[in-house]
Length: 205
Ligand SMILES: Nc1ncnc2c1ncn2[C@@H]1O[C@H](COP(=O)(O)OP(=O)(O)OP(=O)(O)O)[C@@H](O)[C@H]1O
Ligand SMILES: [Mg+2]
Image (cartoon, rainbow, N blue to C red):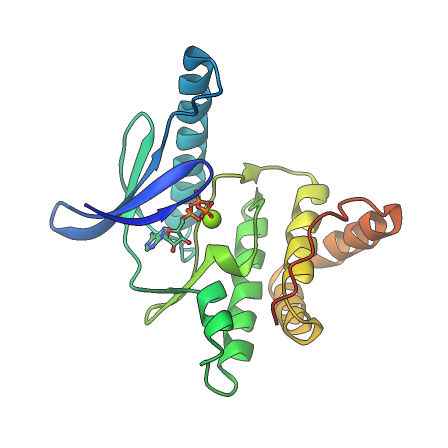
């Protein structure tokens, strides 16, 4: 199996599953945690991520389909494309392409929020663009929640990650596609007034 990525919590490999192009996201043991506790945390996060992926994909949201679930592994459909982060860094996007992508990025978040899913790490690193469209990946920090706070934080993280211009395109499409967008935007304003969550500034655009 070819290693695709190694993050803080997990390693991703490219593989085949039942004749399909797949990836396996393997949550690896953390040496610094007590073993039994570590196993439990990894199982919980794996189950939660798979459950949320399944909830989103069964409602037709563009996310990778879950193919099989192990104790600490998720086998999912392999998307043939690049992360939005990579596309933005290479600066080889054609004119108007980023704008079109960010319209979709807003729509995807509207679809997730309408299902009660707050993503938890909604940045260009966790968006993949393929010939089949704009997909959301990495639901490791996601929650199903009624609260507008976590949803507003999804907006805030995107705001901190991209240029004003791209954020505004994203926000207009999010707002057009989600009936509760007004309340979430208000919550975001409140959060910004409170002056919390100042730690992440990742201006890439
Ligand atoms: N379904 C998929 N198809 C193709 N590539 C994928 C898929 N899921 C993830 N990847 C690749 O693996 C990388 C890491 O995946 P993911 O974001 O889910 O894991 P992570 O543990 O959060 O890693 P990181 O800490 O690097 O963000 C992605 O940036 C992407 O390049
Ligand atoms: Mg990630």
